[in-house]
Every structure is written in structure tokens, then in C-alpha cells.
Image 1 (cartoon, rainbow, N blue to C red):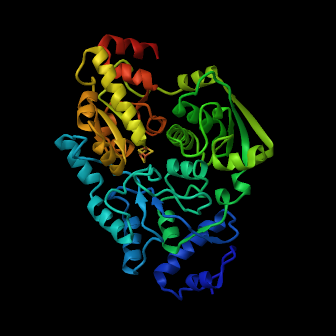
Image 2: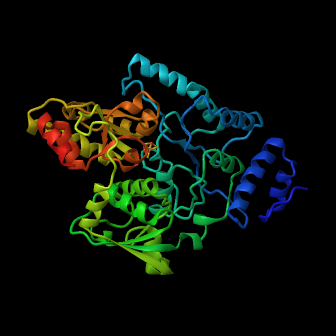
Image 3: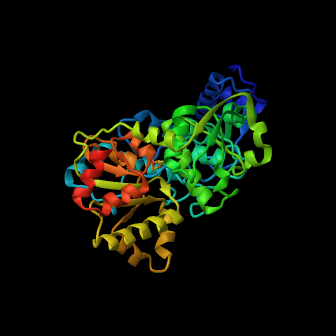
Length: 438
Ligand code: F3S
């Protein structure tokens, strides 16, 4: 009999002892060892659908694909139909040159094979590739109190904070093994104790700050701790009101990537903060005060990674994390107005609005959508810009973005929304002046 420090039920012990087959035994051993590392008390049943972080068939990670082959051969599937992060490319909408296509074929040589594996494991459908799986058009929306084993950092932050579900920031592979077992180790953000805040973040600005910058500031200061943010209820309404969802989606993605925040509470807005108020704060909490000067300091500290800071950008990506329907509407209209004002018919560089396939389909059904999109000069895409840029050829592109996650993991240049629009429609001279001033 194999023993684990973590307390197992008789059924779990049988699985660990191989009575349900060697593959399930290996899955249980991996998940139990993972739980032991974090002093998990026991395993708890998953109550929501999975979302996996690994969306790309990278040829060099053979053991991962072998593991999934073994799960499939043993007849195992995920506990519920699941979604996955966005694909690394979208050839129909984001054009690549022949050399880039060759690189993609080499780097992501197992893409088709991997997607076939995902279908056999229980992928929701062919549109299930997005990091914003919780949006209503996609439908993988956990309920408050659901226990999950998600891994995509932006989705983890949203599910925990905005929806009140419970998931740790798991890794690729562990997320699948938990889904196959239908269980996750009880530790960290799955526990009441792990969900208490150790930081009180006071937002003391005159206007609602840029979500990506506020999230970045909070992530860099609190790192992997749980912040309790006060001051945002002057602008954000509780529940799943559109502005609240969009704002906290972007704030969470920035906090999760510029730091490692997996859960944040917003006083008067997010579910646990509304129920428990400041009793969520640990007695020894620390305080971080954020005003306009602090946000300016944070933005001024972003490194400039382009060889020539005054060079022209090559491409613009908006939508990391993936945009909501309301955000697509906003960007399409904002770009169209700015282009008209500038007397232009298209942005100065190819501009991609990235969102879930289901959200893009919904936008296309809106009245006048094709015309509005044409007037914006932007294109819709469903890829993950980070994975698209994650190869030596595409990494050379000079990217501009309003995403702090994309800025953190690539050489993309971060611009605030207004500056991004100005750069996309402005005269070359104006843009150079802008860069010279940064
Ligand atoms: Fe989503 Fe890819 Fe950005 S997974 S959060 S679009 S890095």
C-alpha cells in the first residue's frame, strides 16, 4: 500500500494503490504529491468545469502529449466539458509571411494532433479556445463557491475574485490530472484562511485609474499575496455589471502577471468583500497607498526593450486578456472616430482586436458590425498575442499594446489607451515626439 501524508478516502487510496488501473494510479500519485508539497489536508471534489492553460502543440514538449495519450488510452476524460487558452496563431486573420509560417509549422508542429487529443479528453467545442472563458458568450462561468483546478493566471484571478469560485494557480499538466480525477488538493486559495487579505490597498485617485496600470502596481507590490482593495466602489458596481467585469478582468490579468496575484478583493464590489467586509483582512496586514503620482511612477519604470525607441511600430495587439463584447464595441468605435478625425482610412499599423471565437461571432451578429469594423481599420483575431510572438522571428516585431501582461512577457511597448489611439492615427512626427518623451 502506497502512503501519502495527505489524508485520502478509501476510494482515493484504492486509486493510489492501482486498483483502478495504472494510469489513474499515476494521475493520483502526481496530484497527491503535489498536494503534499503544499501541506494539503486532503483532496476535495471539483464542482465546476475545467479550463486548461496549454493551448499549443509545441513539438518540443513530447512527454506532455505522451501523458495525454496515456489518459485517452485508459478511457479517461475530464470531469466536465472544458475550455482552453487561445491558440498561438490565427492564420485566417493574422497574416504571416512564408518564413514565419515555416517557423510556426516547426514550433507548433503538434497543434492539430494536440487539438484532437483535447477533443477526446472532453473539449467543450472548437470555439473553446480563449483565456476569457468565463464570459457569457463562452459559457464556462464558474458559480460562487465552485472548486476548480485552473491554471491560466488571468482566468484564475477572475474566477477567484470576481466570481467567488475557488482555485489555486495550478500548472499545465496538474490542471488536466485534477480534471481527470475530478479532485484538487485542499490548500491555499481553496481554503478560507488562504483567501484572507494580507494587504490593504487604498486607491486614492480622482478618477477611476487605468485597470492595467493599477493591476500592475498592485501585482508588483503585493506579489503573490491577497490584496483587499478599497476606493474602487466609487466607480464600480457590485455583481457582474459590464464595467466591473471588464475592469476587473484587466486589473486581475495585470496583477497576476506583473506579480503573481491569484485572488484580490474589492471592497463593496467583489462577492467575498461584500459579504465579509474588512474582516477579510488579516490582523497584521500591510498598507499600500495608490495615487496618481504612484501610478505615474509605476508606468515610468517599465523598461523600453526596443533597440531603437523612436522606431515605428510594426503591429498593434489589443486584447490580452481577450476582450469582452463591450470592449470590442468600444475599440471599434473609438478607432473609427479617431481615424475620421485624423482624416485617415486605416491605422498606421495593422491592429488586431483579440477575443474568444464565441465573442467574435456574437460581435459579427450585431447590426452594422462589418461596416463598423471596416471603418475602424482593425481586424478581429482569436489568437493569444503572447504565444504568437513567442518565437525568434515574430519576437522581432515592434509591438504596441495596452496590455501589461503582453508587455511583461514580450518586448511589446505598453501605451495607455489614449496614447495607443493617438499613435495609431497620428502623424509620424507626432508619434516620434511621443516616443522621444517617454
Ligand atoms: Fe490571454 Fe494569451 Fe494574454 S492567454 S491573457 S491573450 S497572454
